[in-house]
Image (cartoon, rainbow, N blue to C red; front, side, top):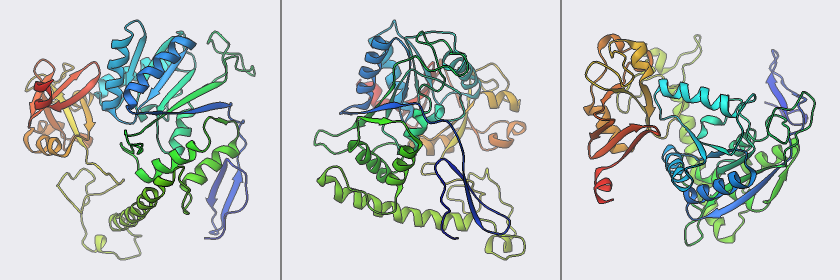
Length: 407
């Protein structure tokens, strides 16, 4: 591949029929100015609760809080409701059944979407499920630290449509009358000052992003060039200068670990790939019948479409041996699908769910439900391998029974 032709960002890049690398700038309106604030904290959920309540009370607008894990989002939702019962709060994440998630999504779109009719103060607590696809529009944003490209994606939910000062949708071509949008980014540190790089993202990218933001915040983001520079700076192959001298060794170590992981992932992708028909490779030579739903532990022959750090499992929630929690029959694949959700629990719980829970009736073992397990709830609760599981208004939760008894 040759050098990338010059073109301003945003741009579309492709390879033409002759194998030449092509690129072309795409004209889109300049992003609306947004002010980014970095808030250091010792407990991201506690800080999120504080900041959200401050913003909701001062602005009276529609707010969005994004946390990187379902458990953190559930805890923040609880705390906000307990601290201010009068504030309207919604919760949206992936640990709801298909039936409930569909209903919640409709409510979220009606409440926070382009044609929203309600006015604040109101807050949506969510995970990454709101980053893409949904046309949502918020007056203020509070988000946990994430890789820079995902932070920019989250910022796209802030002042997405032009509105009048009262929050109503402005006519086409009109300017947004709301005050300049502001996003608070929560960066968690240990008591010793070390950054807490927890969660679902690569630690080196998180530290690179944090170093980038510490050097710039408060930061006014108002051009496509700034967006490109931010992404290029964080993801550049060369080392980034850490904000603090004591972080430099940690950053170098994390970058080296990430490089090794990249090589490992590339090898796994090559092994899982199926070569062209005219070529020969060990997978096609073995004439394997690949199955993307193969749940054999450690299977090397299942068709893979993505790399996963943590295994996931589809669970169907049941109220009895024959019916789902939504009243449908477990014998009906559609009803079973509506009561299903995908989870990635701790390893010990994952193993127990996989080995002890029964499968669906044979006729429902189709598609994504082929390897699903059935979890039967009594009064919305169940116990599995020392864990207490529950499904309530905040979705599926689990906690160790020892922790429940001691609390």
